[in-house]
Each structure stands twice: as C-alpha cells, then as structure tokens.
Length: 485
Image (cartoon, rainbow, N blue to C red; front, side, top):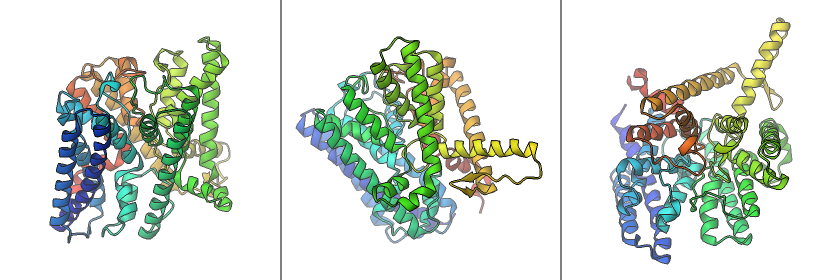
C-alpha cells in the first residue's frame, strides 16, 4: 500500500472527527439547560476531537486520491474504530463509566447502533451523556462513511467501493460514483425527514421534547438506547405504537422510501418483492406472538396486540427497544424473536442482521434446487422482482450465510470460555452480532451487560463491529493476501 493512500485515509478521518466533534458540541445544550455539571467536560471533549480532526485534515488536505481499492475496506474499519475511540471521551471525562473497557463497550454499541448497554440505571446518567448516547446511534445507524459521502462527495476515492464496503447489504442501485452519491443523498434526505416527523409526532402525543428527540434518534436508527431505565415500557401505548412505526419504516429500504415519498409508482412496482416478504414475515410473526401472549400468558387482547406488535417490530428491525421483559415469555416466542433479530430488515435500511433480501434469495434458491431434483432438464433461475438473479449474487448470499453462522457459533464458544453461561452466551452473541442488543438472562429484557467480564465485553464489542459491517469487510483484513502488494 502506498504512503499517499495512507495520507488520504488520514485526511478522510480528519473530516469525520471534525463532524464528531461538532456533534459533541451540541451536547453542551442539555448540559447547560439541565445544569448537570458536565458542560466543561463536554466542551473539552468537543474541542479536543475538533482539534485532532482539523489537524489531520489540514496536514493531509492535498492527499485526496486513494488509488488502491483495498484501502476502502481498511478505511471503513479504521473509521469505525477511531470514531468509537473518540466517542468514549464523554463517558470517561464525566465519570459515567469507571473504566475504559466499559466506555469502549458503550461507545461501540452506540456507534454500531447495537443497543447493548453496561448501564443498569440509564436514567441516572447526566443529560449530556444521554444525548451523546442517542447521537452516536443516530449517525451510526445511517452509516459514518455514507454521511460523509452525502455531505462531502469530492473525496478523490472510489465512492462505490466505500459504499459497498460499509453497506454491503445495500440495494445495488448504482454502479458509478455519481449515482452512488445521488443515492446516498436521497437516503440522507429520507433519514432526516423521518427523524423530524417522528420527533413532532411524539411531541404532539404528549411526550416531552427531550424524550421525543432522544427516543426518535435511537429508534429511527434501529439502535434502541433509551433515556429511561425501563426502555420504552413506561411511555403511553400511543407513543409505543408511534415508535413501532418509526422502527418499521427504518427497516424499509431507504431508496424505496424515497420512491414512495416522491410517488414514483412505476419504479416502485419493480422493487416490491423484498418489501412484500418483509411485511409478510412481520405479519406472521406478530400473529404468532400475539396469540401466544393471549392464550398462553393470559394477556388481554389489547395488551397482547400492543406488546406483541411493538416487541416483534423491535426484534425484526434489530432495534432492541424493550416494551416488556420478553425473556420471561413462553419459550417459542423468545426463540422466534431471536430468529427475527438474526434475519433483520430490508437491505439498504438502518437495520442489522442478515437482511430479508438474502433470506428471500436463499429460500427461492432452495426451491429452485428442489424443483431441479424433480425436473433436471428444466432451467429454473432464482428471480427477484421478476428478474433472474445471477449465480454470482446467489453464491455471495450463501457465503455470507455461512460466514455469519460460523461467526455466531465461534462467538458463543468464546463467550462461554470467558465464563458466561450457555444461555447468556447465545443471547449475547446473537444480540451483538445482529445489532439487536438485548440478550438472554441478566443481559436481556431490562437488564444490562454490566456483569460481563472485561474479556467478554471486549469480545462483544468486536462482535458488534463484525455485525455492523456484515463480517466480510472486517474478516478480509485478516487474510494474508490482503496485505500483499
């Protein structure tokens, strides 16, 4: 790798650190308004982050061309790591965490919009730290690199390589730098519009503006952090349904949402397969869990419908907001919620997991293979939106499923070696890798990961990064061939 490539990476990092420092500066508003005693610490964190970013950008501002495409993968991973590192500053300087390990876990969970937390009593945190947690999920849910591509497109780098390295599950809507930037900007426009709309909706429903801003940031990003220790269980049923709507829309492909908002029906008709499967899977899961809550757990129909709908949407979209302690529900319901979190929402959304598009392609590929067993001479291509899916894409989907499954199994084994019992190891591995957050046992429901050992917390942080970048972008860095000239 050329030295000029490394300098260009540092320039890109400087831009992002300046943006992160600016967001830290906004946390001064609640610090001063609520007089929580953290204004000086937040100001210092923002100033330091801005200064480092400005220094990197100014020093390497002329090195804007990256020639080696492998640098896209290295750049994306480094950006998530460095921004997570600087995100620990507010936790450490305000005394919210007692060690760097705890601060790193919380910041990684926020930046990757996972939602796992080490704070048993979130409501006791300073207001500035609460807003910072919400902000990390908001910009992390959209995508750090995508945010910069939307704001500053002239970077001298293969933008499509960056786009696919960070959002490898995104809808393949453009294969040129120009079309990639257009797609990202449209996505950002939809993201901002949804954020504003749900803040207003929650505010009009009677929620305080402070809570409305924080809960919208964390639920529209499929994150799940809350300003309350019981997540979203204590807000009104109407507000829970509004947040369920935010989660549901955040799980839809943002390019499709743009087409819906702009009433481009002709283009929408050719992109409906994934949306139909997403809604069908959600409807069947809600029906199953509502039935279990009513007939097995004894909930009334209204409570069963509310709890089952909100919690199922939260699981499928890997948001992790908790409306009830689902770890106490009937075992089949718990298992279904875990499977839904592994599945995730639509490709090109803020959700984690493997994405319903890949699940759909895998199911249709399985159907084609079974048909070929009965009729070997008949050609049965896998189709998506009425068009044949290339064998290259089908093979990629199968590889991603295999890598995801192997990573999950290895993750469970390592967590058990760290001293975590089997049930919690499975829950934590699924929660961190899928981006859902809450696990099983003490780390599920309204619990936290505070009781995990430092080694387990570090590994869970690594699992979050793997899940957010869909494994392949990180794993490729460990291949010897990647580092050869």
